Amino acid sequence: MREIKFMAFDKENNKMIGPFEVGSKLSEIWPPEMQYIGKKDDNGTEIYEGFILKFKDHEGHWEKGGKILTHWPNIGVVFWDAIEAKFNCTDKDTNNQPNWWLCSEKEVIGNICQNKGFLEEDKEND
Image (cartoon, rainbow, N blue to C red; front, side, top):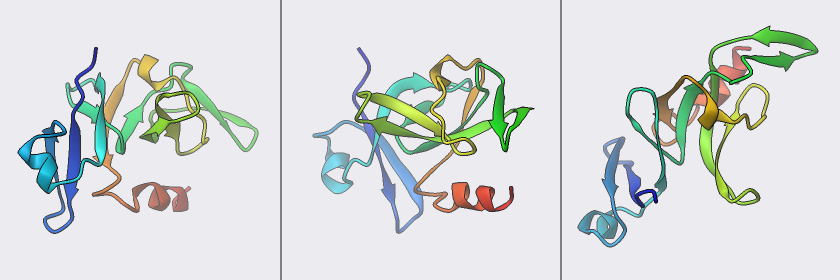
């Protein structure tokens, strides 16, 4: 069974607070915003909901504009998928939800609180 813990974002100081458990002193001060999903990236960094991941699709390719491209990395944001009742990650280029937890390479590169425009900026550069 995975640990249930959270992180929060301190907007004043632009930094993440945690991890902490609900009911702890920190959770009384900072409302929990991002839940730990029970997995770590290749560097041992815990992955939380709202984290931005760089990952290599286990199929190693994707399609854009009718053209098959091989690439690394896919980039997406971890979120709670209420329909499938699990944490998921949407690839920002294809809007697909690859089986990223099966990927041989994955790395946390940021979070949506500290990198609000990250995904939109990257789309503008395509």
